[in-house]
Image (tube, rainbow over all chains, first blue to last red; front, side, top):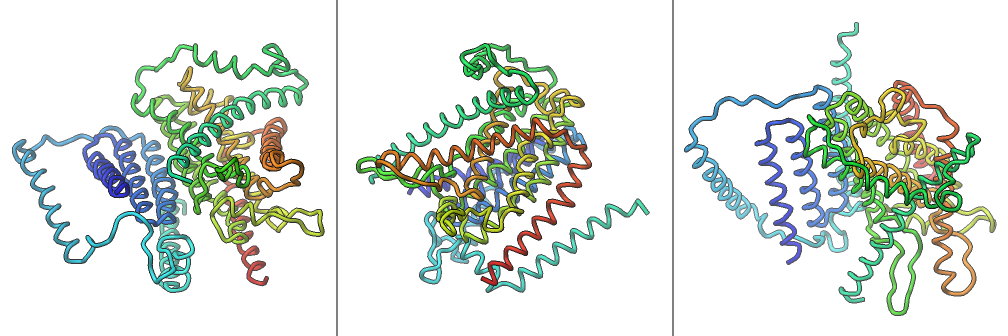
Length: 174
Length: 344
């Protein structure tokens, strides 16, 4: 019960942050809203019993990636974005609720068809009998035993992307 | 233990931890002024109380009574938010630090740490990485060149050294096989030949300890890596435009981070609370805490000693040191440690 209440609090925070991200005019406010989204996602992972994923979500996304976003915004000294004049106000008033309701219905249908709505929120989910899903040991076993090849391929892909970025950034010096 | 007792015990532990941490912060400032003073052939604070011991109290009162100026043209919401982020993240990470083993008082038995979670180390790293926003936003929202430069320097420096800091801990994790800080301490209990303690620093993690110290100095913006607040070039860096309690919050955050880093160093590399335990039951449960406090004090003294000894690095030297020396060294340390553990 408590897990369900917490889930709705963090889910509301997450959606609110996402909407604020779009509405805000200044890029730094948008970046901070994105941090709120990342943080509440981490808390939802925690509610699902995936504490390792939650911690990594905070360290990598809310910590490292978003710090770089904020850093770039500070460095470019980006100002408030200029908005084009809005369209019809009636369309906004009717369109936004209609879109939300439409997405809600779509989500309900999809989660019912795929069986996602039968996953319980809160408490660690037990997989394979004794193996607790989401703890560091279980994730390590998945990454380095069951899915070793995809994991290594992804690492090499990221390495190639990093080297590509370095090459592109240094090209002007020759 | 019922849920009511559990909540009550937790609240008591949180209150004690916060009080002790804030007192430690205040007296680290006093210790720093005193020790650096003696190193420079001065007395340091002497006027308020015996040996200037009441100086932190006087400083605190002064901060409270100063006028709280908010300069015009600042980005107000973020200007207010930045010191709050800095001080909150600095005080939160103490929650997973174990200062002693389990103690039993009557029918209540509890570990001497606010909460023992199995990803304790990751929580500290996560909170530290969020703490960067306090400094970065302070620099940006002040709308001043000096603050801006300080904020930029701080965020670049903290991102760079976070990598080396995280990698330096992996050696310890490979030995222990757990992220839980109390597991890490328990694994270091015992001695070889009766006198060499089985601390991680003596288990081949000396290089890891060295990288950790260097990265920790940079993470807490201390000399020799205190470029974000280099007073000769940036006035006071990211907190130039802050006054009164808002300035004090940045100050508290910096020293609280120092204490946390010292606690983490003791837990990870120096055996946590392990040490000789003897005497009556009460003394037996209090001695480990004393051993722990002694290690933290030694580490803080080292911080101050370095501050009194070393000059400040240049910024390009700082970046080159972090990326070209500490990072490869940390990776080499991981490789060697894994090989040793695999061969065992």
